[in-house]
Image: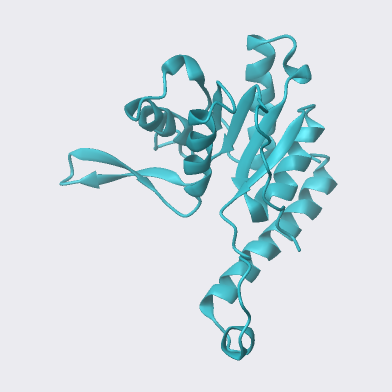
Length: 199
């Protein structure tokens, strides 16, 4: 009930930008020398966005994510993501990065500031917002509050439709507990963001 449903992109439909919310790209050190980019839980956001771009749904990918380090010791996620996108053949001219944000509110606010400098008519444009289905409600609220004309494109569905059996309905599981953790985080996040005026 909390997750936003999948979006159907109609034939010929076009958006002015695909906005990806980060939170899943980082690096690991190999032999203490080579830094390798790694993708954690949430990487469906990137895969779906690349697919949308390749299908011509949009000519721009806007990646928004800074670093979760309070000491800024790590490379911003948006920079790492851009390096990966370039490696797989997405042209530099198609990529816009926002690398200062540390939460969803800042994703929207700093992305807005970048677009304001690039295009005075940015508010009249249509954007696809790509993030996990459980995170979409708060994300949509933040971006709409900042004046974006956004359509939700949910990914990383946790509540998948399945055939219910006695086993998967009654027997407790670690996965169910983990999903409740995500849900509680989002519910608390909505209350806090509302109180702060972020949404």
